[in-house]
Amino acid sequence: MIALIKKAVPRSVKTFYRHQKSLLAIVKDFCYDYKRYRKHYASIHLKTKDNLQAFLIKEYHAVEKGMALRNARQGFGVERITRLIRETEHYINCYGYDSTTDITLKTLKEYCAFDARSNTKANPVIPMIEKLLAKTEILDHVNNGGGTKEIRKTDIDNSIHFDYSRFVRSRFSTRDFTDIPVDTALVMEALDDARFTPSVCNRQAWKAYVVDHSNPELKQKFLGVQNGNRGFGEYISTLIVITGKLSAFFDYERNQVFIDGGMFAMSVVMALHARGLGTCCLNTSYTAKKNEAFNKVMDLDSDCVPIMFIAVGNLKEQYKVAVSARKPLAEIATVL
Ligand SMILES: Cc1cc2nc3c(=O)[nH]c(=O)nc-3n(C[C@H](O)[C@H](O)[C@H](O)COP(=O)(O)O)c2cc1C
Image (tube, rainbow, N blue to C red):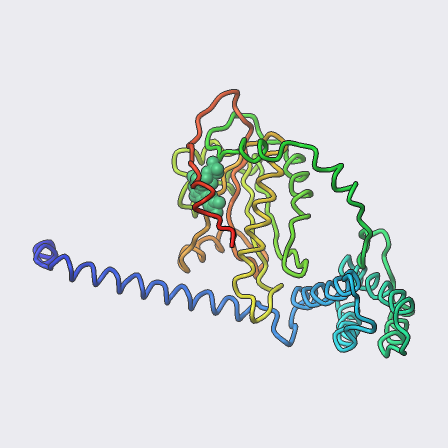
């Protein structure tokens, strides 16, 4: 009977119905994204450690940038720096010292030196910074610092003597690998390089989870909530789950997590390629329902959103890939 009714309904009505259904699905997914963003984003209250950390990074970076400008303005950023000092104290009181406090304090220290060099008027934030520095600790061993840095053109020139065009054109998504497990140390080296991916205000709001060959059950669970590994999932040695952290973004940055996360993922792919490993990005274009299934696989940071998986494997001596031909340059780039 139902089959008969279905047959009797005109095609135009069916198309209309399907279209409405897909619009409703989009609305439902938008609502899901909204609720998720509302829960985690860095609101004015800076509720969590990650929110506060994102604020410190955004603000110390504004100071670094200000000092690096060709015509750095004397005594710039008084209002911002005043709040940065307050929030840094708050962060240290709540969560102690870490690489973020270290870089923030080093940047503020350099600001004092910068101000002493260039500012003729008394700057009200200098005594505040000095007070903060006197009662806090810079952990020199944690990182190589914040502030500004002199770069020589020759340093750049000396680091670009390789055939980049050939390198990028030699990478293909690989869906066939040897049975030899990937060395996790190599993957970690690649991730170490990927840390140097640029990100909005240097917030680095990404986190990679490496499911290596010794954990096939977990790998299978993740692949089970991914649409697009049929026919080759079983050959993947290591699966990297690339996620982005919503807690690092402010009210006007709702899409930034996917931009920065995507750039990070690209760096990981290239760093693995540079080590002679095969990779294939695997989408996590999830509906709300699918995203919930992903969340259930294991407890990742609660503010994490999936960006993509990266399948990794050792290359065979010879194998086939899809060409994935590219559009001509003229179709994707216009000189204005
Ligand atoms: C975000 C993203 C998601 C992807 N998802 C899948 C996927 O689910 N399954 C798959 O087989 N390939 C996937 N790919 C690989 C693309 O098909 C591939 O990158 C594209 O065809 C270009 O080919 P190339 O990587 O060989 O240059 C994905 C790529 C990206 C960047």
